[in-house]
Image 1 (tube, rainbow, N blue to C red):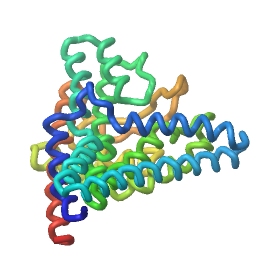
Image 2 (image 1 turned 90 degrees about the horizontal axis):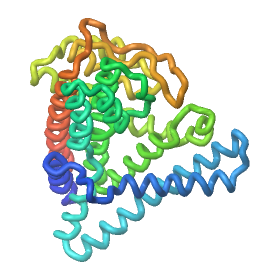
Image 3 (image 1 turned 30 degrees about the vertical axis):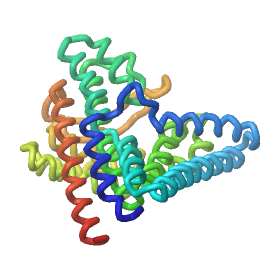
Length: 321
């Protein structure tokens, strides 16, 4: 199985760039999400509704979901490779493809860009609501654009570079391991009344598994900024200054680079679940953010992804072959 990891990852990456996530295909992340929802319901019924009880329930959720997302794909790959190496390679390539989000992130964020270009602010609000967790009903055109650029920046790490790293380490199993944790964090890792205890374990584990990938993503993005002619020196300056301007230890890493490279200001206060959260800004307010910055952010996304694949491939060949 190990000899096929690099070819499978590279094939999966190319499939993601070319095909993305077809709407007709049931996505494994939906299956993971359904499992999380079902387990949460059962665990909340079984464990006491105390701080300790909810934390224990959240820990059991993490154990169950991560175990399932490692054992099931691992078992399927074992059987496929036993059947024939080609069968294993095809299955592992598809697993890697489905756990990457490069093209889908561009596709969904560019829908926001297209609505803004058409001066359809309400349509842009609806489009951006599909890719961000904040409340979007009252967002201005500037707020919509900022939200889209931020999600491209953050998900360059979460949706592309981090999965690639774990794929290089453990193939399709590594991809599912990472995506299980990341999906749990996106569903239960909130600090609101409902999840502040239940989601603690998932949120902490997500911070841990993203710690190295987020920082690697930031420097890959700096390289992409330099190659693509953006303000790479400002990207480094803003990264060093603002990379901690977020409640998460990882989220501001790529956002800071993106803000510096584009010469705009990101983050700041935002509404979530009807409540205003005060957040520090990232970057200098040199100019007003514009719809064209969404296109530029996607250019950075693709450049960062290609650089990461090249670096990971060279490291894999140097270490494993």
